[in-house]
Length: 112
Length: 116
Image (tube, rainbow over all chains, first blue to last red; front, side, top):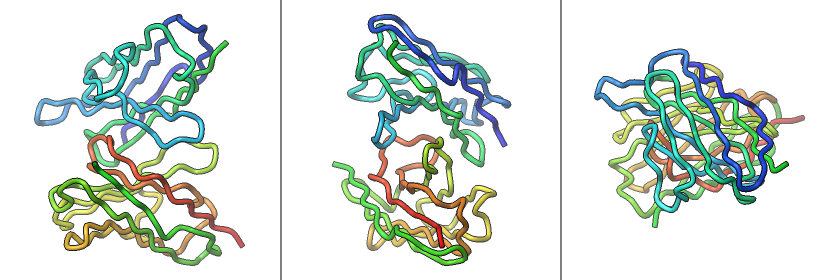
């Protein structure tokens, strides 16, 4: 199975400052069609998960442009520019290239 | 508007069975792969199972293989998860989700508790 390792697992941030979460895969996530099915999800406290980014760097509709995704192959990053209070929650990377689908352990973002 | 409405959760004893349903609307259900994802209390997300648009192909996490069965009724736009031989570690909120490579649309979640 593909193991997704996120770091850090806990991320205290100051409002208005940037934050970065890493997701490293045990295998390449490039699919045979040339796409890389790595997505990022946000789960606010008590809420259903919400997808922010798909195929590494594509922002979903309604997602603020302070969120961005980057990376390739096995190394991926979610960047939050200027963290806001509403960004508190747990962030997961997820791969949809290989079966079984797998998620990272989650990174808890909190305000200092 | 895409909607995924789950039902069928609840409390069940170890070794028991439950059937979850997910009623879909707002998109062409019969053209979409569908999935189940679960989240144990205080834990992260775990993919459980996916099914192709026709229902001909299914995939399962090792943790549920042989005990859970995913199916669908395209005439009723409904996804199912039959859960047998339930264990305490199956206690979780179960979400249905559209697609299988990436999940944009999620149901509201349905709580399953396995306890005596």
